[in-house]
Image 1: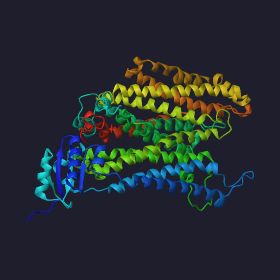
Image 2 (image 1 turned 60 degrees about the vertical axis):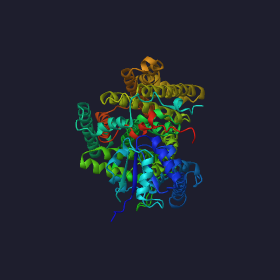
Image 3 (image 1 turned 135 degrees about the vertical axis):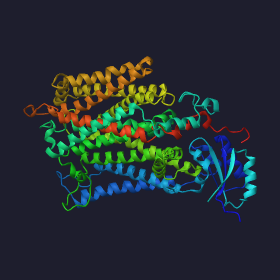
Length: 177
Length: 458
């Protein structure tokens, strides 16, 4: 009986080779694939059609919530909870609220940027099948990897290996789940 | 027009001959080596001694109160607030390099942003210490934050001092987040490269399982860009808010609308001086001249010169407005600064901040690391004196001559100040030893090989 695998991984030497391989795999019809590189490659995002994610929206919401919370906190404290009458000046002294409102906007927006980034990436994830490939340690140094996952409808162990071999990788390896 | 690959290629940012592998190995080896250089031990030892002195000074302060400092009426903001403003200003260059230069697509920043951000974080840690120590009862510092309490009181949100609490704590948090996010891919590199089991575990946990997936990179890039966009107005606001601590008061020499931009320029000025003061010795000790090149030093010196000129303009304007505004107290304040008990500090700061940096106009000075290092130190001293003169001379001689009194710093003042330099260096040398001081993945993107060569048909 054949053991199930997570996918097949091809190793490349240059970012150009990886981008070309990713394009070829997309063209061939593979959809469940991911590329791994030691630095961000803009062309890869486009080659794998990865344009849409909701991070900007999350950050916007975080900022709005932070700003509102900052303003309302000050309003509540200075007008309702602890009003101080200074020479009959208005209690709702909005110009002096601006700074803390601004700081709270930035604070919550930044926190949601970081937490949102981690959530969208599914991190922290200490274990991932790709780490089972010994040479994958080089993905954080100088090698570029393309992985076609077994859950892809077109995936067939023999034929996918054959296809990956046509892309002239350094090596193709099976990824244990 | 500049889209031709050979035109776009960043030739001069880092020295030729580097590959993805060698860049990674060289930067990572500083951390992963078993042989720590003697330079590190000496500096770490010295900073540890200074840190212990700081703990001593703080211990005495806790036991006896702020009376051990030279604070006497009317100068109730002495060294502590001077040091606070100075340290937080130093931090600003780190955020400027990491956020503003990222937004402006200044790719040369990639090899100095990591340690500049670390510098920000540690400078803010030193800065944040002073207002708290200055409270008198530092253990009640949490009273600064609004929280439901049995006393039924709340902070006064109309006070710039409360604004400052929010500005500085937000700045510290956002700087730490930005720094950590930038570190994640490099922590993964260290995790994959170390042979030590404990180190692999520690870096592995910190890297959160980063594996360089294209999906992750695309989210990650957006996150860095957004964080940079958020940090940019933040960094400009922080020193503005710090200057509000002064401008909102009516003390002559403080009550002025140009203090915010003047403070921000001064902050960047001193911050770049600190970047140079750290980068020059580090790159020669660790042999990183190929990554932190003369061009980096040159650019930093130019930023220093530009912000120094803004600061010079502010000094001239300060004197001019005092004369032109016709306010007797403002005029007296400028006269006191120039000729009074603080004249030595005033004229030394003029020398350090205006006169000495003019040497940076010369390419010969900018390309000589030793001279640059010296001028960076001169600027750091000058900026400290500037904060001292603004704070202390304005308070010492205010409206009523009968209340005038001169500030005398005690040995505890000096010890606390020098102690925070120890704390800063202690944290910095720990950072150098345990984390990559140059952003490895961002330097990889600077290599010519990182460029994807598009085929003509696609």
